[in-house]
Length: 115
Image (cartoon, rainbow, N blue to C red; front, side):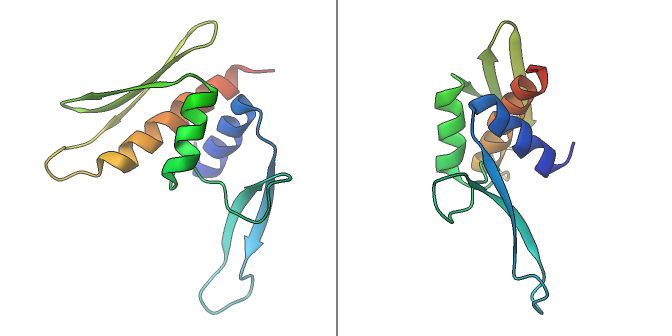
């Protein structure tokens, strides 16, 4: 599943209405696509990269995060358990990135199960 699909499903699960945008279209630095939240101004919404956006998802969806020797696990119960795991080496890995990814994957799974 692409990052875009993960973000769309995670937002759906949390009841967040996203507005897609393209930034610097045609610029020499390249094009960037992303999302903003409807009615909340121009700030990009990306819980895969932003700790605050990931925390917002975890709180809205009651996702718990557990740190284990092999990585990070995010769990939520919405009629059934949704568990997402991200492997990370605590000695060399980026725990924050793995934590955000696990939260988004758990949220996306909830969104995927929604009508």
